[in-house]
Image (cartoon, rainbow, N blue to C red; front, side):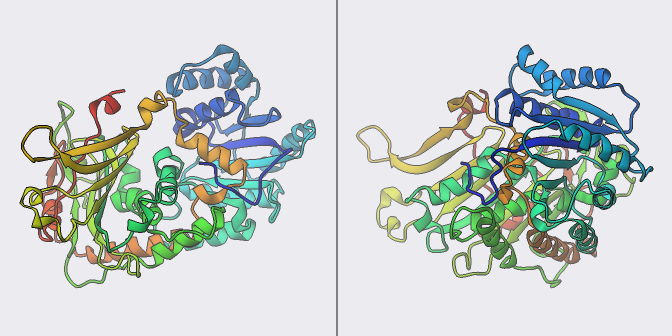
Length: 510
């Protein structure tokens, strides 16, 4: 679904500049994304991709590296004609953008010279694929050297997560950035918002008359949001020691999903209307108060175990991890949105690393009808479930109850299934393709506004304060398991259980 926006960019060329052009994110995600956008004609013909890095590479050397990266990470086969066209638009600029403030003036001269060759006015889109501590520094220098001009809608900056390491540092970084740019020029990335099934939440909710009238505490028993990974920290021990699961997943991805699921219908599908309603939902999210050590929260850290049939180490022996680390790699909690629509509906959230399966899934569990138990045949029937799977098997299904074939009146579960993977042959645009394209279109609905971030940081810090005294010994779950036993007890104590829903094998294995 393409949302409307106020700032479409017809008749504009594009200068896409990537700070951190030699980094892993650029090679795995950004270059393949730009290849597909250019190959499929979704960007203007007047378009340049300028990778900025500190390594001493010639443009020819960089292009060969880019060719290899696109071939390895493309979501589909690579067409050589499209590849050559993409590489002709790709440039490499060596620049000491951290240690040498003077390098920006030289880059501006080079950029203006190349920009003048375009017939159409150019959108300058800066993507900061660098370590978070350099976000503010780069934005300040771009402003000081007039590479970006405040309130110029054609000058835009895309900023990767994490945005700050806590509420105080996030506020400090935001102050630095808003000194140089208007909020409308800032595109804070949460790549989950670019995933197709996350974008589909609004379509499912507001495009179907069978769901929105039931989307409230009268008909929904509980909501479950799960993000499970089989991978460990994968060489990112130093980063993970600073972030943990709360800042790596809960503060951004999972709370964004919660906001989309629980927000009120916006006045229209303009970006700011959508983001206004998301902020209201996050503001209504009940903060934790320190009434007990981790009451209502299950945290965990993986120990050694077996993952996908192979022995794997525990978190504490991963590279760059402290041998007595208390950083959590798992979180499960009960959230509550205190407003008229959702009062009394528990929202269970869980996320973890080194679990038994990889999955990001939303389960809406509907209440059983109060009169159903009148029929003896219906007494043990499971509830209706709406399942939205974000990954790996993108799709959704609706679980209902129907009669089983035969003379006996026996009930059976039936799944009404939609597999995006099968319907579109698995060739669905990647999240970064969507995000780059919408930033060029000035559609901010897929990006996080500052007040959304502020509310999510407040919630995460309330969780941290609840568990500040520890209370849960680590490690407390084996790699390759479902996670700590305490997570299951959280739901069992309320008469519920985590829903482990599998889409059909045909969708999962496609």
